[in-house]
Amino acid sequence: MGKSFRDRRKADFDDHYGRNGRDVDNILVALADVYITDATIAKLLARDGAQIERYRQAYECGEDMVRVVLRPRFGGGYNIEDGRHRVIAAKQAGIAFIEAKLVG
Image (cartoon, rainbow, N blue to C red; front, side, top):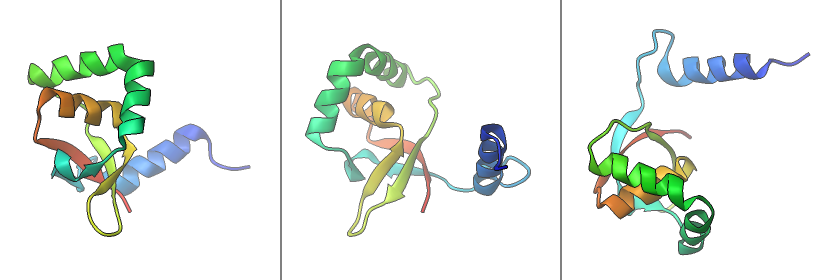
């Protein structure tokens, strides 16, 4: 039998944070380097506009936000693995850099 969801998530946590829980891949990334299509933005704003608005307000108030997970793109920039709503909200709030974890 395979690993449970909880065991897989713990293994992912240990792989990316180390056994002591310290973050080792945390960086600041320019939002201009994060790739997201206009169609994706429009779709998410139509479907989850209220959530994105709450995130935008949180960014503008300087609240701590969960970092996004990015994967480097061939040829430069980053694709979003997790955190599309937060990226859109940060762009709307006029934030220049976003805290991210790089994978891959």
